[in-house]
Amino acid sequence: MERSHLKSPIEDSRRLWTFKTLCIHTEYSSSFWCQGHSIQLDHVVLVTVEFDDREIFQWSKVTTSINNLILEKLYCDHCGTMRIQGNHNYSCKLKFKEQSIIDQNPHQLLWKRSKPPQFPTRYNLPRFAITMNELTLGLKEKLSPIDLRLRPDQRYLDIDCYNFLSLATA
Image (cartoon, rainbow, N blue to C red; front, side, top):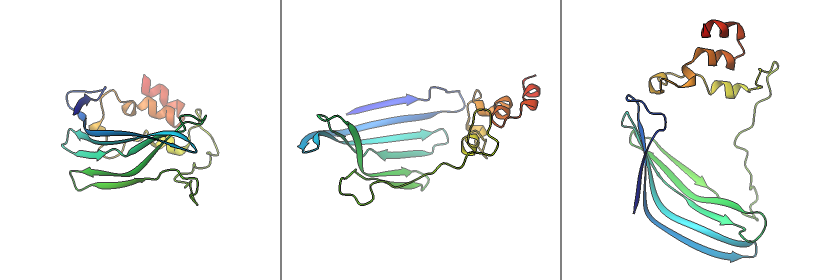
């Protein structure tokens, strides 16, 4: 049985989250198919993330297969169902589908990038990337004091407002 307890690399005295894993059981198996040699890892592992506001999320890992060990194109597959359970009535069920030669629809588009902006920014960031730095309601209190999203000069750089940038750094 293995237990580990890690803290966030950027931690301050007011904010803390912990990451724990509990390895209950691991099984390894190997097989030889016409495609090449493969190793399958079946492990029962409980992963827990606990935040300072006592919100806890737990999940277990899915089966991992390392395929084509003998042939040229080595690849990993993850298959099975992962259930993520929160202590505040949040839950999620993710189904990992194994790659198959006979699958009718092996690839499913989950996300498509938006068209580039008419007037690109200096760093050519799409709108989605810029919104990743926006402070949402309640996020400011959870961030470390040295988080870049709290710096106004960084925000002005993101949106190409160089006139305000000199005022923010002065």
